[in-house]
Length: 580
Image 1 (cartoon, rainbow, N blue to C red):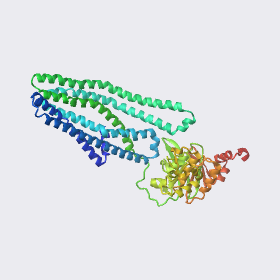
Image 2: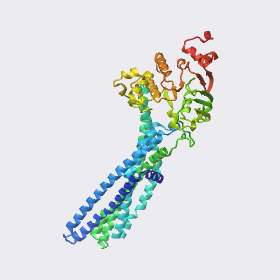
Image 3: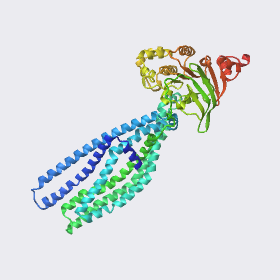
Image 4: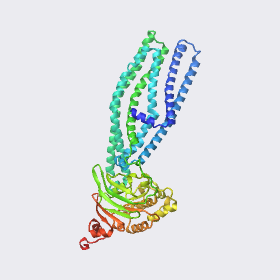
């Protein structure tokens, strides 16, 4: 727990840290002011009421009112400081966490569920804010109130004070026992919250699939299980607390009974004045209430500790793929690509094995093969989303590991079959990778991707807001906007992963003509299943089980009578036996 507290303290900027210290100091000072009015009450009873002397009455009441107003004013200022600073600290933490996630590698996102990351960025961070705005000051408040009240009561009558605080060790033992048992339950509850958020996120993201298969009831039941598991974990913690709560309440009330009973005996024996007894009855809560609150504070501390640990895991996580210390600065990417005996595996599963080929600047390489053969992995390795296990990938003769990531990926424009469009205007999506584009340039790239015509028919043209993932557009329309977005960065290497799989043959032919006359030079890397998309490529590769089984031009592969030729016959309706 101290590790989490130290971490959040270190991540407070200096101005907020200073104000936080001031706020906690105000909290401690107001705990001292809390003793003033009971002390004045003692004088009010002994020197005014018992002595029947009304002269000091108004001055005492005036001071009591001033102290009350001053204390409440300081507490108000303290709360303003704590709330403002905690919000600013969490704002900065959330910003830093989001920045760290932006630069995390693909393995990070492969290993973490979206719902879990969202929980860390929202609920877990909110518990960190709750610690700064409430938990820590309540701890200071409880400790200082108990300490100052105990010291003052000891000065008034040490015997009665000793009787009051003798119960305190029992309360501490109970709360420590409770803390030991509740911590793992908070970890379990937090995991159930993450699972519930993941289920909700997946359902929202995949709502079209759910509706397409009429699986609403199934999804409803699946979420119900996650929701109930989270509720049950919450109830188990509450039941545990309720087991300890009556014992704590009994001990707290025992303090008040001791005060009244023993205090009365002391007055009879002349060891205590009525005013001093009023002080004890007025401050007995200052001894008992911190003990009562301690259970709740430990409860909250455990929740904070669990949540902060998850946030820290994200905060201190380091990407495996980063710029090398000896990374080379390149003026411009030419587009020469070379795979040199490249192999890649994840968790001992072989994805690619001994892949070698080279492409010169301005040439086109096409890759085809059955599903799962490793086609998309080639792109991921080229852009260094993952690092090769063996071998080397070179761009312009330089190992991609020695390229600066921003330069490497900035020189590669990618359009994939699985299109993701942002909740933004059409213009904003096309210009996503190059914010300096003018509207005319955006329209030009949209025309080259054969997207201009349908964009013009949208309600507000290029200013039309399209929904998340391009909701409201057809698959082919989304693919064409994604292609325009890839072209807009004027890449040295243009990667098209089944980019035209959702468009008709006429549109595909038009796009290919436009790609042949781009206003900039680029090497084309095409992954497709259509022969029409790759027949003009300078080099065609056929992958199977992560290995290159065929390579050559269109004519050369047809002559080999292999997988490429079989695919050609199937797509063009040729009888393989007659074609032989």
